[in-house]
Length: 107
Image 1 (spheres, rainbow, N blue to C red):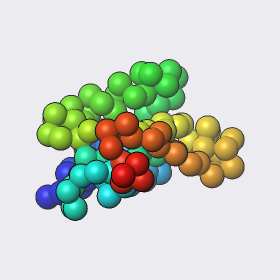
Image 2: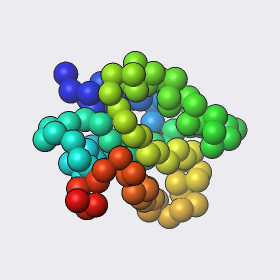
Image 3: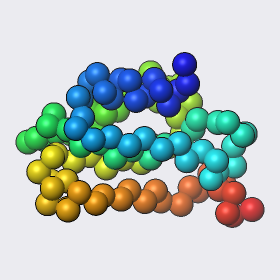
Image 4: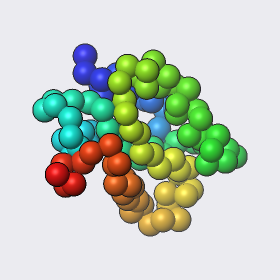
């Protein structure tokens, strides 16, 4: 099973999101083809209700502790409640910051 699939499965089981998008952005960085090291996540879940942004991210990192140790270099995430998604007009983007570890664009 791919690392991306394991991450998706753990988030689905642990958060029961109403919406989730996990995008592998490794190809944008100076890593071997087929790598699973850089991910971009948008997850919308009732489980985040009443939690600060930091506590939401801690919850995600707790669920993915094994995957983070297994080689995930970067996980950019946006964590929202369904009400926050609705307030945003259901249009949510999550632009990752430039990687300082050597992106393909910097070469």
